[in-house]
Image 1: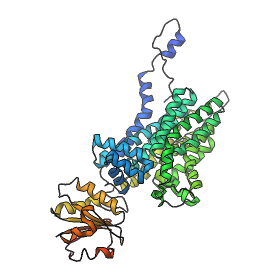
Image 2 (image 1 turned 135 degrees about the vertical axis):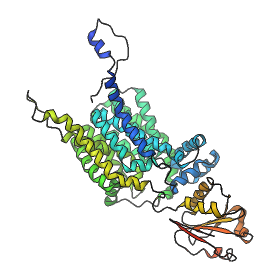
Image 3 (image 1 turned 30 degrees about the vertical axis):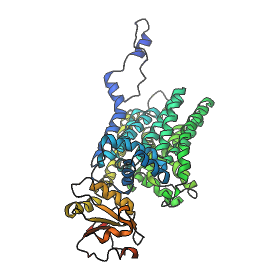
Image 4 (image 1 turned 90 degrees about the vertical axis):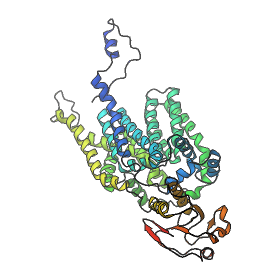
Length: 506
């Protein structure tokens, strides 16, 4: 495949100007097909891989949070983000509209992420074509498509895949704007940078890579316009950052980063230790041998991890899914490193160097082998990612199936487990999708914690009149809070069903 020149803007061709006529002649159909294969084939591959089993795995805690927030009224959503999750409020607002149109099945909830990873693979291919050549772009896009983390977060109702697509698009727009720095191109760049930051604030760590690239061009006008565009993109994100700083307890579970954990997160961003062993070393080799282009891709791949390491004592945010947007850079660098190091060195003599005739063959086959190896090594992880339950999460489908089969009208429901309110949302989600009776949750409690009663069951008074109570608890029995024991004194345990990560008792 060869890079094609853009078509001339005017279709008029005259015989009086054969050179201009040749330049304006439309590309032959095979060349047009070859050109469009570069973005389309990786997009299709990523879409099909991500779509496979998209509704098989049940929603886990974070996805349930998305569903619960996005199905609130706009006023209810505003009240929620005043308290929590303000930094991803734009994503919740987007999903609010999406659910209104396309529904709330697992597949529907995840479809924006599926489409986003297809776009990410396509954009990675176009970036590779622009920076290097069509073959490199095509193979890099396919490498993105087979990465386990890409399909994992394609099947997740969270903003990480959308942020990755926005970062890739912003990088492509940067390349276009630096080629022909019109204000319209810089405006498009600013809008996409803002979108990336609004989808997930950590995605703004793409800017150091862009700064490195524009500085390497040594064009003052480009640097100034980039600065203005980047600033315009960051400004809309600042109110969310300010509000998010007041809700820092939401990410207090993330440990402070260390050098060791940073290396571990770099490995985890590919989704497989074996795949990482193939990709990371090649990528670092590409970063140090490709000059300006290597600096752009290398900073895009590496800088977000070490910026997050640097700020970790103040704000611990280093977790692999937050930096999923670096994956296209890792893949591009790995493919280019292989491509560059399997071709013979350029020969300045008049006669071709020995083996030069075989270079095109090697430059296609060897990187293609890298993609195939990564796909093969990643297969077990793809299978694991499509299990029924996310490891460590409760089998809510199974729990609700028990309720749908055996619960009757008038039964009450109590939840006594970690993340009890989120578990309640998950039970409600799956109950809505069954034909069984609707059960009222009368109390929720963390293990050993003081219960929170529903408004209609003040202080547990409703339990005295209930004939049957279903209790959903964690995988192991934990003593109830003493304040609950008097309310449950009249009940006897009639049935216990043990499921993955959850126990259902009657």
